[in-house]
Structure formats: C-alpha cells, structure tokens
Length: 266
Image 1 (tube, rainbow, N blue to C red):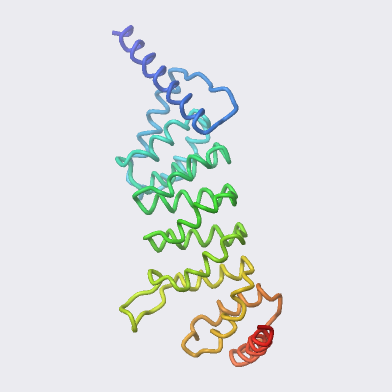
Image 2 (cartoon, rainbow, N blue to C red):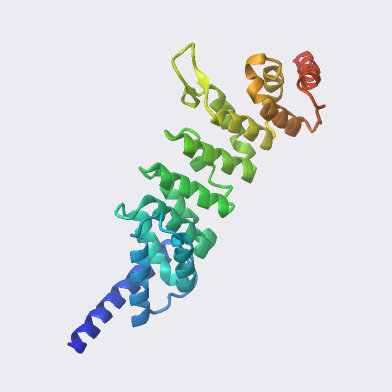
C-alpha cells in the first residue's frame, strides 16, 4: 500500500515538474527550475484548492498571497492553471494574475498581456491592472484596443494605465473617446455622459495633449458642462502649466482668454 502511494506521489511530482518547466519557459525565466519534493506536491495541491474557495471568504486573499510567496516559482504552474481555467471563481483568477505578476515580475508581462482578450471582463481588467503594476508602458497596442472595449470598466482601467504610465503616444486615441457613443447613454438627441468622460478629460491632461487645449477651454465656458468644471480645469492646468483662479466665473474668464488667444493663432 505504501509503495503504491509513493509511486503515485512520484508520478504527480513528475507531472508538476513538467508543468513548472513549461511555465518557466513560457515566462522566459532565466533561472533554473527547482525539483519538487513530495511535501511540495501536497502543499501545492492544497494551494490550488484554495482558489476553489468562495472569493468572499474572509482572509482568502491574504492566504493566497502568503502561500504563493512561500512557494515562489514553484507556484507559477498553479497560478497559470487558475488564470486559464473557468472552473475557478473569477475573483480568485484575478488574484492569480496579480500574484503571477508579483512573483515573476516583468517576465510575466507577455503572458499576462494575452488576457486582455479574455472573454470575461474581470480577467481583462486584471491583465491591465497587472501590466500597470509592472510599469509596462510599451504595450500601446493593447491599451489602444482596451480603450474600445465593450466593458466600461475595462475602458476606465485602460485610461488609468495610460494616465499613470504617461503614454503620450495614445493621446489621440483618448481624445477620440470624447466622440465615441459607447461612452454615452440614451438615444440620439438625448444622450447623457457616463462617468468615464471625467476620466477621459483628466487623462488628456495627464498626457499633456496640446490639441485638446482650445476645445477644453471652450467646453468649460458652457453651462451644460458645469459638472465637469473641476475635470476640465485640472486638464487645462496640466496642459498649459498655468494656474487658474478659484471660483467658477473666474475660471471661465481665465480660460476664455486662453481660448481667444489660441483662436488668434489659427
């Protein structure tokens, strides 16, 4: 009986080692894979089962992180498996994505970036969030595509990446979102702005999009954009380097002069 159990454990260990080697190769990790001991196999099986738990379980996130960092690279095959398989709760797959990024660093970026095409919006957001944490500014095509995602939450996260990573190359893509009807609700003629418009305007300021200066200075004059005054003022200050006065009317006069000056340049 003992011999049988031992043989099974050896088989599982060999399988796990093969999975680890594939994962390490996939992530292009230069380090040599470590052999799994019998206790590793048992512990990693328990670790995988944790991802099947209810994502709302108190302390689960901390427990997953603790175990992932205890195993480090040995946890990589498990994390990849959780990310790829739909049987695990989406929130736990989110955690697996973040943990993979934290353990493997920028080596994991190419693999994680592929999940921006995942069918579930949460995994697309997780991918973008992980790339932001890894400070990956070179994935401009990925972020540009995410700006047109069917999910509003994904589009907001893409804006956050562009804003915090200072990706000026995508400023025109962000500006085009002001005219994208998916960022508005209601029928034609009665459309209303969604919350993402505030993020769009602020991102334009963060990437210092000069071409938006005059249009934004005009928008801030219109009463119908009263709810966006703080956001418009924020971006205009970022783009121009000027500091506007306090008070709505004072700000409007201040930016009105700028709009007039810009018009004379044309």
